[in-house]
Length: 467
Image (cartoon, rainbow, N blue to C red; front, side, top):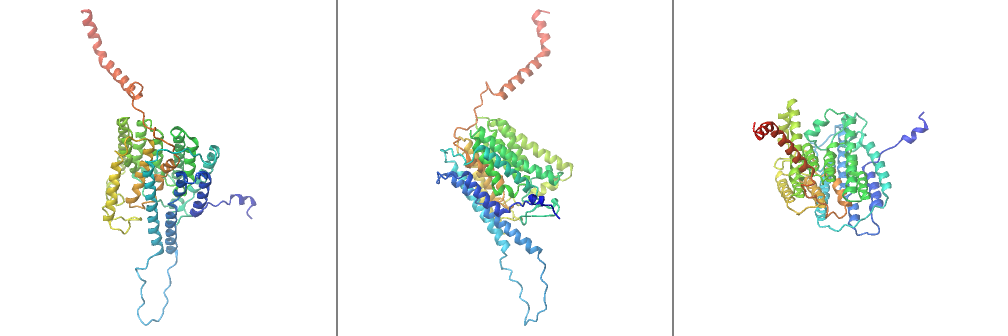
């Protein structure tokens, strides 16, 4: 007989729908300003849940597909008929297929709204300070409790085809989306528990970065903690909490924002993100424009050096394992990032002619190029909004489940919701008198000059004394 004490351990995590409802109610209670019903903050708190129905449609489609696959095949019965048996109509739509297409359509529609919201944020200069409805200590306690819940979700093996927990081996877990080759090589020798631990700590690093930005750049610790708490509360975070390739790039991007006053460090972090996850390289025009004449050279040097070093190390590892040629062939043949090829993975573009994806891709590239010159000059608010817009824009042309990569830009949306007026947050001009790198260069040049002049010193001294 099971002891009565085990009843306190009979804890079941909520499903996606329950998480959606409870997180929405809790978000309204914490961040909705009832004294200012028509404020932008209230609108953002409500609309940030806009993508959840799309994910629920996808979960329903995968659940139906799994049930159909697990159902036993019908046994044919001998029935006398007057003619041949009519086959099933191939044009009859399948319910799971309809839900899948509707889910991706909803996700792209919601992503379109988020893109518009980011561009609209460029025109918002005056942002009133709206404190959350809970104190800083209460938000910190809630964030810690939510993080513990995410740990439980992250270490629960889940079948992502159906969205329900499985009792099979943890190695049977199915990832959503393709990992980049550097991340795949880094995690290949790791076991299930180490991978999940790394992914969970990545989420913790994102929350810590949001808090640091709130304290140092927003000068509002409660705003930074509110952004981190909201990030942990949203259903998007719990959906792929155990998959590091969804959150790892944003760890580096968020901390690059936190260290924007040091262009060398910011370039190093963004270069590391671009060299290990690829898509953060699309943020380079924004950041170059942000640092224009205020540390552009050192930012670009750090970005290029670190990104090239990551790719070089990846290439060497693949070459040593005789996988380099195969990896290059697979990357060049992958249609997910090449709009002129027919997509083969699940997504909105499945079954649609590739020619319709090319105009979307061209418009996206034009937008990325335009971010280098618009607006000028840029402040920190512009960088946050445009970086989020560029990452959201990838969802429209990326063929592999485009729309589900919400964690690629979710921390930036949180900063967008809780940011104050940041018009004066720009990189400081490089002053040669106080810049540490300039002084270091001068010291090295002086030391090198003394070293080169040292052998000539005796000869010059002899000539001076007439010997």
